[in-house]
Length: 388
Image (cartoon, rainbow, N blue to C red; front, side):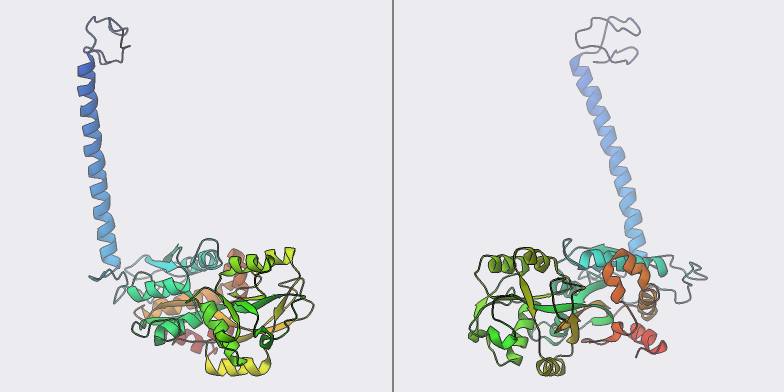
C-alpha cells in the first residue's frame, strides 16, 4: 500500500507511515485504483510510441519500394543512383541505401551461410543493404522471386531451367517468367554413392539394384532420372527408393539400399559421416554419357571429385554438376545488377573469408552453364571484362 499523504510505500499491516508519520495509509482499494491508473498511462504511452514507429517505417518503405496490390515488394522502377562511387561517395544520389531481401536455404545447409557471406560482400561494396532470409532453397526461392517477395535468391540452375520453361519438375501451367541470372557461384556436384564392396563400378551396374534417387519432385530425382536414361536405364529398371540424403545414408548403413544420389557441394556432410561407418566409393559418369547430357541439358557442367574433398578416394572421379546461381527479378534496376556482380567478382576473397565456397567465384566460373538469360546489367559487366 501507499501513504495517502506522502505517497511512499508502506507495509500492508502498518498502522502509520514510517516516512511522514501519518496514521492514514491508503486502503487496498485505493492501491488497486492507483495501480490501474498507472497501467492505463503506460499502455497509452506505449501505443503512442508504436504508432509513431509504424508511421516512420511505412513512410520510409513507401519511398524506397513501389509495392503493388498483390504484395510485390519489388519496385518497377527502383530509385537508384547509377553515379555513386564504391568508396561511399554518393554524389547527387538521392537514395542513401537500398534495402534488398535475399532468400537462401535452411540454416543447416550451405545456402544460408554462403548467402550471408555473399550478402556481406554486396552490402560492403554497393549502395545496397542485403538482408538474408532462411527458406526452402531452390524451388521456394524461385517462387519468391516470381511472387515479388525477394530481390535476390540462390538457386540451382537446373531448377531455374525447369521453372522458366515449365518443364520437368515444374508445372507447365505456371512457368516463372521474371527470372534473371546474375552469376553462377559454385558447382553442386552429382555424387552417386555406393559401398566399396557393392560390385557397382558404373551407372550401368545400377540396373536391378536398390537405388535411392531422391525425394519425389526434387532436383536430385530429376538429375538421377536423366543420368540413368543416358545409360538406357529407366526407373522401372531399378528398385526405386525415394529418400533424402540423411535417410539414404541411414538405409545404406542398415543394408536396405545399394546406392543413392546426392546433388550438393563437396564435401557433403552426410557422405562424410557415412564414410566413418562404411567403406565408400563414388561412381563416375562416363565421357560419352556426360557429353550427351551436357548437349541435351544446358545446366550441366563437367567436374571432378578428388581426395582433397574425400580423403578415402583413391582416384579422381569424373562426374557432372549443376551450378548454384545468384538470381534476381528481371525488374531489378540495370545499374544495381551491374554493381552487385562487380562487387562479388572484385571482392571474391572477402566472400571466401565468410564461406569456403567463395573460392569458386571468378569471372570464368560466373558465366558457365547459364540456364536462364543474364540480367542486362550483369551481362554488361561480364562483356566489359571480356568474360562474355
